[in-house]
Length: 345
Image (cartoon, rainbow, N blue to C red):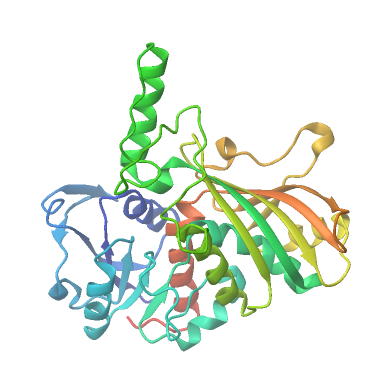
């Protein structure tokens, strides 16, 4: 088996650390591993598979001799991804920098792996909420033809980074001690007003756009259209930050062109790659973020008919946004490319 020189940009962050876990768990065939980060994190030592790695500052020349560059996301992608490609690397990027570029495939392997065959060096990982949703939508769309999607997300604080996790911890401890909770991170750290997420829900993720939707919401619309190759699907999202540490949840109401019953939907989804059906409401069995964290699959339940529209279904899904919503999806892209000889080594 061929082995590949791999670089991880953003190795000290949550997604970067998840890359390392998944590489070890899935026995990914790497020959050499290079860990990269910003100047602030350079010099740190990370132990991995019995070896100590010193984190290097990411520079254009860091990618010399690299076959595969896994970018964990961030502002550096726009500058460094082309530099990596010019030095012979294939980049799988978890930021939003290239997702809507016409010549950059936006890929969820269970959904549109064929798009990888036209890559030009950069492949984009979709938004975490989009990934989790389209894994479930694709088999249903193939079966009955999606017409409209109304989706509300319940997104864990880890999606906003370690600072948001720490702030939730502090807020809970402060509230239990009878103090006044303070907020500096959510909904958006750079904005002037912040709200506690402990014991609260915040119906804003990212900044608002002129159309009244947030940037996060419009990512779900545009990315889903691109991944499914179908701009005709109506998509109405509302994204909400909730006081959960890990795993995003989504409530979907779907309208189809053709008839599909809950029983048919369960059968279709039970055969779908990357999906686990947990749908026994009579036994109180349904997906929950506490039990789907650190799992690779997207879990779906509460599948029921929506009688307010022709050919309607409502359902509930949950997935670990750090694994399937980010790091795992990127590794699965790389595995597909290796299997189909799309990655040099």
